[in-house]
Image (cartoon, rainbow, N blue to C red; front, side):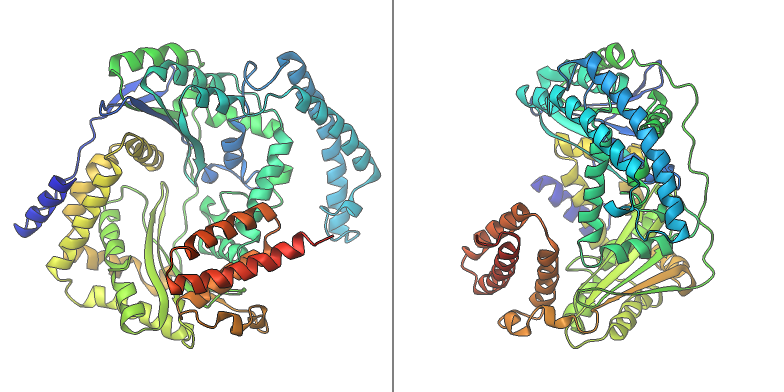
Length: 579
């Protein structure tokens, strides 16, 4: 690492571009359509294995939003030989459950009709359910209870863990669903069998229970945070036509309405071999890994038709959009501009622009927080997605400062980019930072796997080798050109989050005494989240972290911890009253 950083510094001093590490990827194609990426790396006896399904929320449609993320959960439910004590009866129960759910859906249709007539105001309330629906719920629960008696919980994870594996997880974005794990190098065949089995013979047991889990995840991610719902609505306003319009987690009315039949159809279309890339990084021989992958994954039949691409394009914006929301939060501002997809020739200059503006050494923080002292935080963020992109800047107003001042200051910093020459040393500094960050991400087996999954999901794995030189080739003129082209008024959407009138007293100002100006808005936000939290376990974990921080002896940290400790203890007293 030290040699690399010295090389970067030397290159900078000579006016030469910092080099980028090249990852030696071997690409293979299996006969049934799987793409296979192999990276031999023998520094440690471990293998990071993963695969990316080229499907995300952008591939959904209204009515089934959230289904791509639902599969992130369902793919861990097992196979006919994993996850159940009686595979035959398990499948019978799944079939019987579907018969009952079809009848329940017919009742749900009647309930929605009642909602349209105004006979009920919320079909999720128990009193809105028909008598027939209540009877069917009891029947369905009996089938679920019998199936649960047959389940072997978490068997998929247990087998891996027993074999010495770690880091098993998955994620879903607008463009992809990624799965990954790290195993000992002598367990490559186990990985091939386990991963191919769950693709070849998946059993989506506990489908409706897991659907409810996802709905609760949505509640925690969107409903509980002070600005969660507002941010979701702002995103929906920003995108006019593109399917990036809806959240990855799905709309609240869609998640509980997704059927297993719809899930089966979605899986057959998007989880076929020619829509999946397998990736292995670590201690193996490429020829041996290819043989194992062919033997196990080659069993899976090729799909009958190619998965459709996203065809709906975003329409050009004809004017600025503005969104105003009230929430229990410190005044905040966020500005979004439409930009370009990953791999677009302008994306590299936008990446450099992001680096110039973002971080504690970036222009926004230095200009608004340290310089003008009108914000407690400020930054930028570039999102190069598969089909389109966006550039964001945000800031949080300091107490006593208005969002008008903050917004004007943000635009002033952006104007400086286009109107004033960027010093060559500042440009080279951010290029060096990018090169160093990329190098760090590519120095571990697991880090390489994770980067390959993301690169392959948004455009192609070659980007991890090609992006570095393209970043280094960006000029001052390139940065100024993209800033002037994309960061314009008619191309932007502006969101303002302000505190609801009369809600400031929810956190007594006397409780904030002793906190710094930067700590106060953070404390208010945490206090709001604590008051909305319903799980005592989560609160107790937060309390433990706070106590650990307070023990470090920093007076400012102790004062902050004291405030959070009081908020958590009061909420716990409400949830767990003394008998």
